[in-house]
Image (cartoon, rainbow, N blue to C red; front, side, top):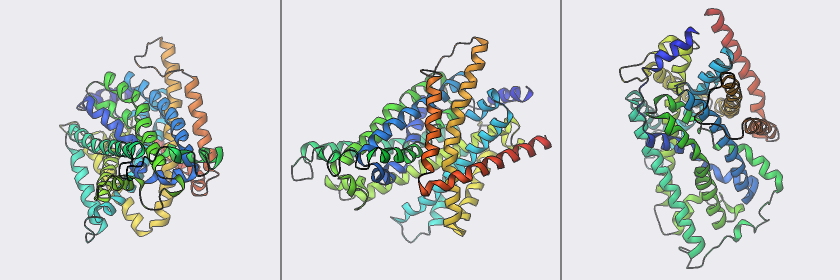
Length: 456
């Protein structure tokens, strides 16, 4: 009980500097990554035009997961997010494992995004070594995160604006090509490509099911909304608004953008002649389409790293407040920033990048496999903790300001869906080995908890 009281006293020093527009754009940026610009081609190859259904189904499940997290975040807006809720409503071990799993997951995400930043910069400046570009971006983003939380919120706000405008531009230009034939000699392309070339289900229902794995991974990061709750100026208003808008965002940015792409280009030709994003801008007479795309994906990578470092610092801070990490990480500066937690997370990101350079294939491959399985663990824990949260609230007869719809059926259906994703991964060779790593990772977390418990 003393630790929970300590949590409350520490939370009073976390400054609520994130405005509603920051929360909205952080939520939006979390759902839009480089996967939409480059990764969409591989997903389309798996399912064809029917991949649109996979995004709709995956988007519905993500909505329920976010509502589950939002229900707890609005009731108790703290830094540490679902790790704190797992600690409070489930127990010490789940809180420990959930927090460290989330922290490590974003260390790997940070490593991945940072490693590609140098590649994007080399597009314009090929003579600069990749590691120098990556290091410069790491230092810049770290410095921004060490200032007031408003600096992070403002940077992420503009990062998200760039991504949003790029996607909206692609949808608008694509619509002009489809309906009016702009850039195609005045001949409208129409929507026939959605059902030609093998039909809407060229690989049958099996293709749609297999594509669900990659579709769900593309949504990784939306749970960042819960992390921001501890520093939102008005979490009771901004968090529900951000979560409720997740559905239409997914419909507009994923389903809308992919519908345009699949209508313009035959699905079996996407990815063969470069990014469809570049091709659409080239179609309407924008010669610098490649430069536009490179600027957008660079922004997306920096945005992902910025968000990952922010969430890592707050999660490590939350773990320290719980007593599940060294006390130094619970220290805040005068602006309410967990400096030690942020710098330590940055340091581990550097180590991961160095390891990836020493043995890029094996080290990077295994760490990314661990990251993908960690995402599923994170989401499953959110749903399980929300069920336990409801049980606790039912005993006290407390009314909730923001409720998850169709509880508890929606929670159980979402959990079954995540379990099915693990089953699907067993049939995908590139994903299968992550299922072997997951138990080892969970055992390592359990051992770490036992060591901490004995020392404590």
